Structure formats: structure tokens, C-alpha cells
Image 1 (tube, rainbow over the protein chains, first blue to last red):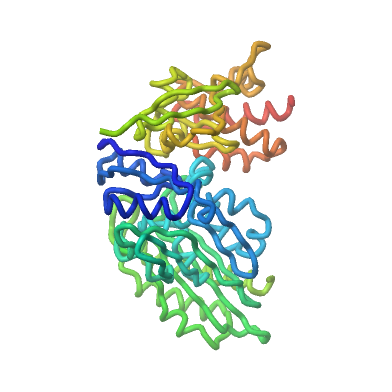
Image 2 (image 1 turned 90 degrees about the horizontal axis):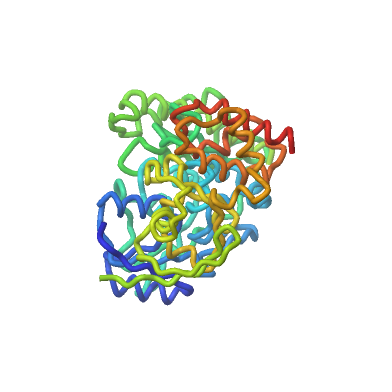
Length: 288
Length: 156
């Protein structure tokens, strides 16, 4: 492994300065559960890692209508917060199934997003919550929607010197519910063969006013299926309509066959998990 | 060339001060710098949990932590589990229930199980299995390990 320096940064300016100095030869460190494994595996070399866990703004977990989650907040800290659990069960779904407790103690949703694997379990749930990513760097700040963040397997919109400071989730509208499910052959500790996140918003009469579906592990990036939104808005949340949504998902994905599953299995799972998560999201929308 | 990092930390209640290469994992730091070899290396990529230690109150895979990261922190390893009075109840139950064969996974399982019982002394079997999912054993098949944890709960 190429030797790299370790910097425990304590301010945004310090992170910016180190990243600006090293270009693509430095990266922020949060949980290390991807980064350190990739460095040891020789995926790429770095001259420095910048630990952002000591940056106060990256540790914010603030629920004030909307939820602001700093990029260094570990999954376990997030899902142990009762107010966050109550407000965002669709995010808790994914936070509690990534890796084991050891991984959940260190990994963050923002860092999972920055790793940008199509199977990243937190990314699709963030998409269906309409989350916004606040990016910072020496050249200024910008905000990107989660669905626009990933550009390919392991690739994203971050330029050299940029990093994610926090992610903001809008306050759940009245009648909003969300859910995430994945298929793995084991009970725990595996990578999704396919996953689906859905959110549903119902009006007072029970009709769908918004429905968002995103699918994991079935394309080069998370697949945000806007055709399902077009299908479901204005309709009733019926089994029949959700089966139709599943058919759209089946056709919308572009999976590969690999050691985890075949193209056909992943298409099939996309349909089934879309139907199931829309159903669960609807139950939560009615309960909430 | 990179410079070594100066680290001060508390391990098993004892103060440690040492220099470590900035790219060295906590696992390597414990084993190769501090000679605390009770923590084992299994996969070295965050899958098997053999290297589990408690860091600032939470269990982590020490292969996925840098030694430099623990500056100012608190670490608990398997070396801190037994006392002069004897084995920790979990260690005793693992022995009695034959919850180990080769033993490579055992320190990690013990650290994880201890953390669970301190947080949730009444955890049910499902919860115990879920909490220990990040620890892999290739010998005993888990049932004996789960029984040992339950026996510890019953005798607590």
C-alpha cells in the first residue's frame, strides 16, 4: 500500500485546504469501511486522508421539520435517535441493514453516497425522500439532488477538492410514507442482489399525490424510475396499480449478470420489491 | 515518506502513548506496535469481525480504523475482559458451552457480545443473532455461541 498521511481536521477550512493542496491524491475519511479497504486493495493510491469526524458541521444531526444530517454521522447514531426514527422510518430501513453493528458504528449515509456503488443501500432511500446534498470545497459551495449525484459505478459529480458536508431531507409532508427493502440470499451482512426504495404521499381522500421509486443494484447507478411517478399520481394506492408500477420497474432497469444474480432475477426482483415497498410506504403514509 | 503520528489513548483502562505510521490500521497497531495480539486478523476487509474492539463505546472492525484515529480515544480489547478474579462470565459460558473451536473468531465474538449485554441485557435470541451478524465463525455454526450468550444472561 502506498504510504499516506493522516490529518484529523477540526474545521471545514482545514479540510478544504488539504483537499485543495492534494487534488485527487487526498480524500475525506469517515468510517473507513470502504476507503481503507480500497486503499489496501490497491484500487487507487492517496498521499493523504483527511478525517472529517472532528469537524463540528459534519457531525450535525438536526431535526427541525427538515432533517440535516452531517456527512460524518454514523448510521448507528442516526438510527438510535428516537425522533429521527419516528420521522423517517424509510431511512431507518436501510441504516439498520448495512453490514453488521461494527460497520453501522462507523459508516455514514453521506459516505455511502460518495462511494457511489449501484448497490449502496442508503442511496435509493435518500432519493425517494427528495434529499439534497450540500457539497463544499475551496472553490465554493453547491447543492445537488441525490438522484443527480452518482454518474457511474464508483463515480459521482464531486470534483477534485470537493466533499459532502451534509445532506438535507425535507420535512415529510402530511400523508407521506417511505420504505426500503433489498433481496440478499443471507439474513444479514450481504450486498443487495437488488433493492427498492419507495415513497408515497396520499391526500385526504387517500389518492396518491406523489410516488417516488428508486432501485439499487440494477444499473450502473441507482435507477430513479420517474415513469412510476407519472403512472401513480392521481390514482388509488391499490394492489393492481402497484403491480403495474412493478412492471414499469422491470422494464426500466438495466442490470448485469454477476456472482450475485442474473439479469432476469434482478428484473424480477425489481418488480417484486417495487410492489412491496410501495405497499409498505402506503401503510406508513396512512399510519403517519 | 510520511511522518509517524503521535497517539495518546486509553486501552483497557491503561494510558498508552506511542508513534504509529499514519496508514497503519488499528488492528496492526494493536498487534504489531503494542503487542496486544489477542485481537485477531481474519479477512482484513471489514467482513468477518474477528478484529472487533470497542472504540469510544461502540464496537468497530479494527482493520477498518487507522491507529492514528484513536488519539484521545478509549479502546477496549479482549485483553481487558478477564480480571485478576477470573474470567468474564461470557468467557466462562463460551468455555462451558464449547462455543469455540479454532478460536480465531472468539475475541471478536466476546467483545461484540459484551457490548450487546451491556446495552441490552435482556436481548432476545433474534436480537443476539442480529447483533452478532458482523462476526463470522467457520467452526461451531453459531448455535453454541448464541447459547453461551443466553447462558450468560440467565446467570447474570
